[in-house]
Amino acid sequence: MNDAIENFMTRSVHTIGTRSPLTEAHRMMNDHAIRHLPVLEGGRLVGMVSQRDLHLVETLRDVDPKTVTVEEAMSQDAYTVAPEAPLAEVAREMARHKYGSAVIIRGSAVLGIFTTTDALRALDTLLTPMKKGTARKAAKPVARKAASKAPARRAGSKANKGTRQATGRSRR
Image (tube, rainbow, N blue to C red):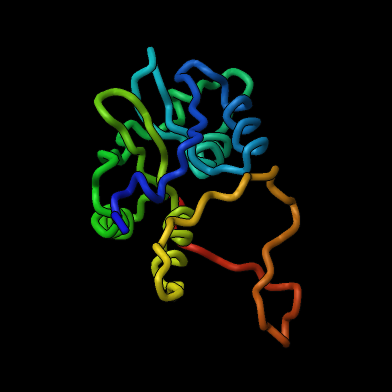
């Protein structure tokens, strides 16, 4: 199997423009159950906005999500890689810098996005034993549904069954 990032990325990338209001970014993230939106200006990648970015900006005084633009909340330094980049190299850089995603580009065209969720799918694909005589295929992304408002539950917890929320590291 070719371990290039293009074999593990999500190809259906949702993007947003710099002049869009934060409410539009929220709507897109909620509608598509995603946490990262590459930001484009004139069809060119200029940054990344995450759920965390939106939350941080919206906690500031006098911020109206209907009038503040994505450009004011985005990070200008999106982590980008070529489609041929090795999965291990991309995962290593994401872990080292605590990036929540990598944008896969060729020239100025956005081809896909590789998120921590895609990384877990890749890990599953690579760790699942193959049946003798079969070729290994990258796990295909599951159709994303609107995000559930139910809290995450930790499996196997007897003492706090159903009350403990899973915690994580930086999603950016």
